[in-house]
Amino acid sequence: MKERNPWHTPLTIIIAVIGVIAIVALVTIAVLQNKPLIPKYKYGIVLDAGSSHTAMYIYEWPAEKDNNTGRVEQTHCCKVSGSGISDYASDPKLAGESLKACMRDAERFVPSERHEETPLYLGATAGMRLLNIKDSAASDRVFQAVSESLQKSPFSFQGARILSGQEEGAFGWVTVNYLDDRLEQGLETTGALDLGGASTQISFISDSFDGSESPSNYVAFRLYGNDYNLYTHSFLCYGKDQALRMALAHQTQSGPGSIVDPCFNNGYSAVKNYSVLYESPCVSGRKPSSAPQTFTHTGKGNFYECQEVVKSIFNFTECKYSQCSFNGIFQPTLQGTYGAFSAYYFVMKFLNLTDTSVPLQSVKEALARLCATPFDTLKKQHPEVKLKFLNEYCFSGTYIFTLLTEGYNFTSRTFSDIKFIKKIKGSDAGWTLGYMLNLTNMIPAEAPDTPLLPHAGYVSVITVIALVLFVLFILSLRPLWPRCSQKPQIV
Image (cartoon, rainbow, N blue to C red; front, side, top):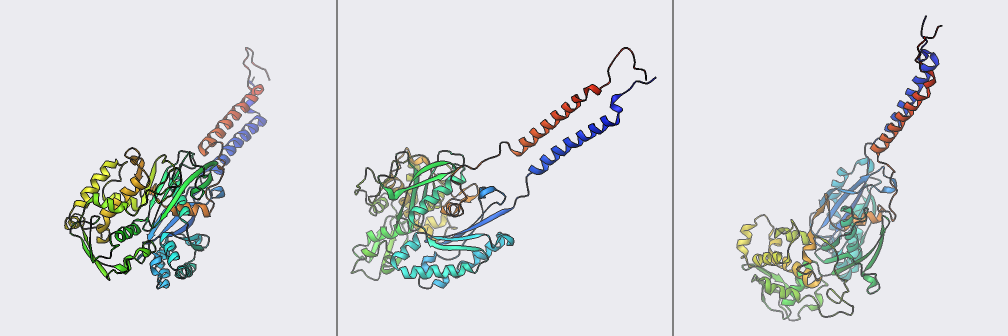
């Protein structure tokens, strides 16, 4: 006599095997379908043609992201040798040739299969703005030369043009906040302070500013579903190099043969040409008529006297608005924290004041010590620094201090809200990334849709559901389970 085991029937075995295979297939397909792919990247190249030099930046982002919403990161930077393209006005072909070494660099850093589809932009800032004011035909010839050079590259050249001051300020603000993940997450934004050789920009969000009082300083953005009312202004001629020209022009109005300058260290001495000093549109209208060909420029090294010289290049009295920064330009009340980059960073780095938020008094004391240091001592202390920069640190530091406090109205309470930065998460702070993000529509106006669950969570849920289905399947076969009874079934 045998006890019948329903599990041994062929139909039950077949159903069980099919059920197990189906569940394994379900989980396997879910894992394979949603597993992270080996990333492929797209690229963009931006040339920043500044007043003192040109730099090339290469950016990359995941190619698989829908609507190009992958995070953009800087992968390479190449500084073009020589000066800015505006300095090649007398020989424009050299402006185009100067870019070739960095473009060869780009060919190595961007995979060859991506060359043709990689957009290439050149944006020129205040140096070319000044050249365009001085000689628009020369400006056009420089742009023609650089465009012809870049069109020969294997990349998709999208043109070269002059950025407006407002664009330069706004795109710098976008860069700083994009890299810090403040835009996508809807966090409180950071203001942007940019200081170049020929202009300076200030950009920040102000709750009290809607553009009605000064429309030219207003930029409205809608990014990731959030609205931003941005105040931004660019001061042409107030970059550190042009500001120095204006300070020297103030001291040479009478056409002297020599000046003793408190903004240069004691022991510094150089012979300078009046025509070269006054060739810039920022000072050309002030050239003294009876000046000699040259003047001797010597240093005195006094921070407090230097600050008075620096103040002379600002107009703090004129203001037709409710409040102003300087030169009659409207500025709302400062709000939030700020990232200060470009020349701000390099000067403050020299002063060892970039690690944390810096108290205003510490900056003042450091500048007083720097300016009072004899020039020969300064050269011995910093043999690695080029003399061109070492000469000017007393002036540049004093100018930054005065611009931020007297110009933009930072106080001892708000100065520590400024952080002096060069990079954010590996990418340079500046306008170039924001410019490319705008031209390639990489930042959507509305927040992009996101999956309900991340990949790991999705796979876990599918696995749990599959196991539950398997258990239910086993339970559905309960009528076929062997029944316990006191009497065995007789076959």
